[in-house]
Amino acid sequence: MSSATAPLRVAVIGVGLGSPPHLRSLADLQDLARLAWVCARTHDRLDDLALPTCARATTRLDDVLGDTGVNAVLVLTPPNTHLELVRRIAGAGKHLLVEKPLDIDLARATALVECCESANVHLAVMLQQRLREGAVRLRELLTAGALGDLVSAGAHLRWWRPQSYYDEPGRGTLARDGGGVLMTQAIHHLDLLLSLIGLPKRVTGSAHTSAVHRMECEDTVAALLHYAGGAVATVTATTAACPGYAERIEINGTLGTATLEGGSLQVRLANGEAFDAGAAQGSGGGADPMAFDHAPHRAVIQDFLQAVRDGRAPLVTGRSALGVHRLIDAIMASARQGSSVALA
Image 1: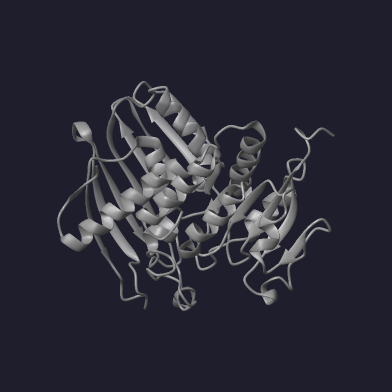
Image 2: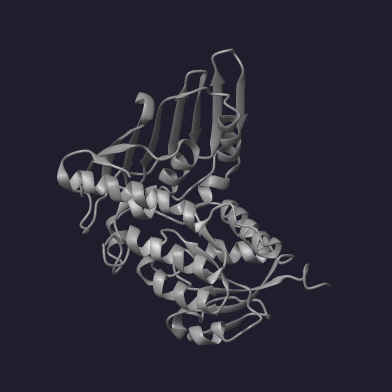
């Protein structure tokens, strides 16, 4: 097997709540990657892991950085740790896939992206909603102009998290997570919306913490996004809607409409044509945040590994992920100020 086709050696940093779909994806992709290292903060986090024989467990990042055979690293640690970890990993010349969000605020997220660009390493982000079948098909239709010009759109997330979820130390705080429902849950769907219709010119937002939860950051948000030419988009997001419902994105154009709900796409055009794609999928919208299939994770990781092998940019780049950070910053700034905020 030539070096060009041999599986890449990959390390995973962090084995918390969000790590299982990444580890399952790597197990599915053994023709592309071999898990070489798993690194956790403490040994007890590694004790119950069922690792393949080729993988080694460690609590020392230096073990991973010192292995010159490791090609790529998945960073799955809390958001506030990302920038410092990425600086060290990129400095060692290793390509990176980072769990969302990039970091806790736009400034740190931008610094993270620039660090990887300066080190000339690939940076992908786990914003897997973009690669769901229905989303891919909708993007193709929009690119082809099938819906015409944008009239209005919406992204709506009615999810549920019990108080026990926020009782986990650091969860829903600015210091660790960078925010509440926007940065932790709705970021996926806002990112998908922006990847379909782009950034707005101006945002008007409202955010608060409902009586349902005891937490530092917001669990309920509404926003109006203003686009050039008069088009508007509405955003609603909450983790206080028991028992949790399928997320929905709507796009209304001059030639037709599209609805993407829980992974299932329905398109209806004014000329009578109809398109359907994808299928309804769980996405962790209820009390169990991990109640979803890992196939979209696998698609992002597979593309990242192939990008490293082919020397091209991944489909979900760090630079492209900065857009959703800008939008979230603008919504929260508008909520604080009580007035609309322009996006530069």
